[in-house]
Image (cartoon, rainbow, N blue to C red):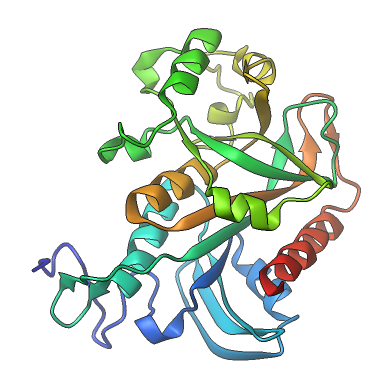
Length: 288
């Protein structure tokens, strides 16, 4: 039995941070970072059957063209993904009354709709990127036993290419769900490695008043290739979603609307339009 200090439940039986019970979620789930983006998606639903919010975690579940879908805000960063993924898994794979894992496990289908900056000149603002791999620069997944599921050769190649300082921890790389990749792929999607940083400023190479450990890291990442796969973009959630998804047995994919191009210093004239287009694209693929 899982101790109450390890799996914390609210007085109404809901999981601690997400404030959800098992009946509140669908098996098809969309993650967004911004809580205000939840209703930008569910406004297209035929109906909304459940809505709640606790802290930055806002959830709405409803029906879109006959498909039951949950939309959830995760907030920013790998640490919030750790909360979200573990508590979602508990909702479907742990009996919350007996506090024991279920014998038959359930796999969730999870798609992140995010915003991101491109690292390549030829991936323009307002385009879409699918993360075939998530590259974690943050250390969060190193708290788990991951050696059997990381892309070890790609990981070693990245460390060598960037002359990575291991005082920052060892980067890790996970592949997306192949089934979800096939379902959501199209000619209009750019693909590659999505880098996941543990912060927005220094960890992503931004310099305001503080010097950073490796001012050349972004340019090194721009030039990194493993076979035919190259770095595409940099954000703050994907590798944690992919890693925990693989460990827990869920099917995960990250899609990003590119609102900035870090390679040429441009920013979208209308980033909201780009995000809206990605929302419509994702909903359409879920409903097929």
